[in-house]
Image 1 (cartoon, rainbow over the protein chains, first blue to last red):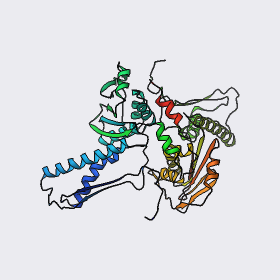
Image 2: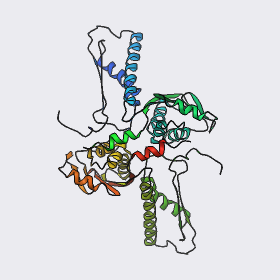
Image 3: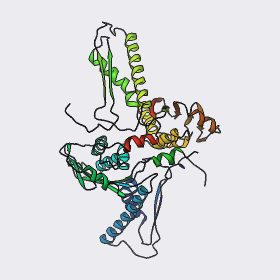
Image 4: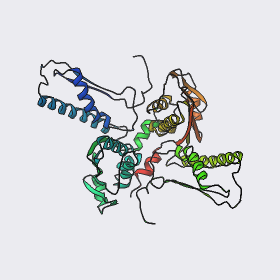
Length: 223
Length: 223
């Protein structure tokens, strides 16, 4: 090692993927970029990138299996996506101080890019993340974070559910059993589902809750 | 009240400023925008906006004093900036769980906009904010947050000081008394000064440290 330590304190991500299929490098690169955008680039613990963040896909060709049909290519891409999403999910679950994974599904945005931006804004909101930690079905914090971005969003049209319970629509909260939803939020995964109802873009983002342990890990650590 | 409660859990900012000078509304608006950009829009506790965030400047004209010379206009603008910056500073000091203010001065960026973006990225970094809480002179977290934005930044050119002690230049940390700087960081205000040395843009941003108390306030609060 040369010794650049700029990103050492961070949760640097190093993902190494291998396959024994025979796949041309250019196709591998395209498939990995698409898989990474829907997995590694869709996971955030504290939104802090590292200069070391790496996803690397190697194909040995040892099996002599080729992606010689559209069906084979689709099957390979689907398997690659599954592996990457599983790894991304594990990153969120293993986040500093995490007690649960929070899966944010945004649907009905004006584009996939808009959906990703909105999902990431919700995922990075310290107010959403602390509400998740406190098992608080706080629809206001989710909608506020969704509305903070530069992408189109209309709270009057949005429909929000937490742990599959509808909590907000038509611009206002619906009547729901907050104690029951709060109890359901104590699970290892909380699902936030937000339908913007203004388009066809969708995206999923994974994060974790924000706990006192995150502060302990990062404030008590000294260089 | 009508009752929109979307932003209630947030640290909504309501700033009301008054003057007895006679100032045309258009000029007041221009001066307030400039003052707000360098004060309210430069303070962040957790980067969560509220739909209620308001800065309002009223001129009664009761004193009959007019901004009838460039000098008088400059004096009024300077006083307005001073008041707004004092209020913004108090917002950071009063942040949820704050034990100190962190003042981030970015100089030598390619533009004022670039400097503001870089300063805000440093101010919003949970890793920087927890390091400040732990009195850790962690130059790596500051530089990493500064380099994360879409604005030009070169760590090989940047010069960083913490509490007026030089800690990084020429692409590497300098030898400094970490224990002494850590002790100095226990003050009510920590000054982070980053000279990018690639342009003439500068900006100041205010934030606070990130403590366990922030989690307590926001995770234990229930709607």
